[in-house]
Amino acid sequence: MKIFKFGGASTNSFDRIQNLGYILQNHTDEKILIVISAMGKMTNSLEKVVEEFYEGKNEEALRLFQKVKDYHLNQLKYLVTFQWQKATNQLTDFFTEVEWLLHDKPVKDYDYYYDQIVCSGELLSSTLISYYLNENRIPNKWIDVRDVLRTDDTFRQAKVDWDVSRKQAREKLMPLFDNTNFVITQGFIGSTDENESTTLGREGSDFTAAIFAELMNAESVTIWKDVNGVMNADPKDFQEAVTIDELSYKEVIEMAYYGAQVIHPKTIKPLQNKDIPLFVRSFFDLRLTGTVITQKSAMLLPPMIVYKRRQVLLMLQSVDFSFVEGKPTTFLYEVLRKLNIRPNLTQNTAISLIICMDDADQKIQEVSQEVSEIFDVSVQKNLTLLTVRHYSDAIIEQLSANKEIILQQKTKDTIQLLMNLS
Ligand SMILES: Nc1ncnc2c1ncn2[C@@H]1O[C@H](COP(=O)(O)OP(=O)(O)O)[C@@H](O)[C@H]1O
Ligand SMILES: N[C@@H](CC(=O)OP(=O)(O)O)C(=O)O
Image (cartoon, rainbow, N blue to C red; front, side, top):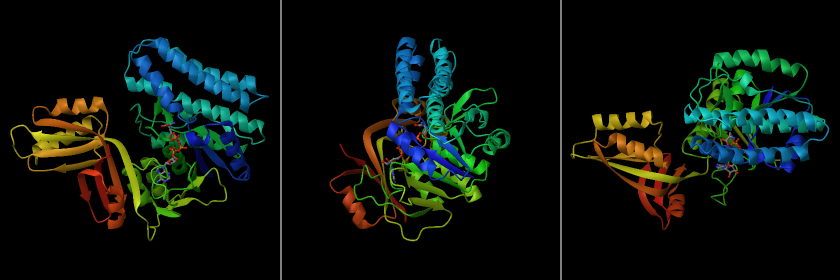
């Protein structure tokens, strides 16, 4: 059994869905669980629906959701002919689940509604694709992942219940392979024991693929991408980026931790547990072998470059000039943990603590408020954090030339530069 994952970029047009079919046609004699994300940037569109709804603007939320409906119904017209009515009915069931909520007033937490609404992106895309493939002689079965992947109720960051999910995978998912080689399901979403939808965190479909690989002892996972494999930098940032043939789990965890967007940071652990190889391959060019990620450490790696934009620097200076070491530092970390903030860089001096984090106005205000008795807080926005692993002096010189460096941190393997590019 193998796992294939197709993200938003590989399902955002008729041509790309057709291409997904060509890829599967090369694997018709293998058992494959296919994990699908929402089409293109649909999750962002659904997030806007949630925002309007939670602000009490039901009409606007419904108007935005109508656009989501129109988009999928329009795709359906191109993708499905014979089973069009049946597919429309199934999409309509998902639309109704969301609209039913959107007519109400919010009485629960934002994150709860987020998950109930945003999960529809994956349900809709996987349904469309399943019908399309069945109609094009690529027989498959569709399953609602919420019947298999059990999570707790930490909405938007749900934690997997491995035991229940393993049992449900064995009882509900595995038997589907008795009658077909391809089973299609959704990435990113799960369900609580009360049948409430949950999500695993943005970009979480890679993680879903890895979870199922672990649960079902898969032979491998392949993530199909719009790039040739994992490169030493995002090719959108760095024209000279090169594809890396082989990487270790450890290297990928480090890259993802520093913000490389190519693979979700949680993906590696389940694979590492069972030594399952992860392939990252181009869905444009099937001749390319892409990148294989395993336990084995790669020998010589080029500098691995990661840019993290929209960073903010918080400078916290102790109000009475007392040393920050000890209690004040512990206190700050408690506040960050409580607010679910992971600093991307930290430093301290005798009387100040410095943290660099993703920009989010709400969170900045909350931190400032929580620590106001101990620290004066100043904020600098619009910064970019550059991380280079396996750096050389030459590459650092090239990447930092003529840039204002606000902060620098260096270990033997990794250098981080917080820069003001404006
Ligand atoms: N180190 C890297 N190697 C390859 N691609 C990268 C890297 N860092 C960032 N990317 C970006 O990741 C994108 C693919 O990821 P993503 O858009 O999340 O795909 P999907 O939504 O289909 O999963 C590429 O288009 C590329 O710009
Ligand atoms: N659709 C979700 C989950 C996901 O992983 O998407 P993608 O595979 O396109 O990154 C998101 O955008 O966050």
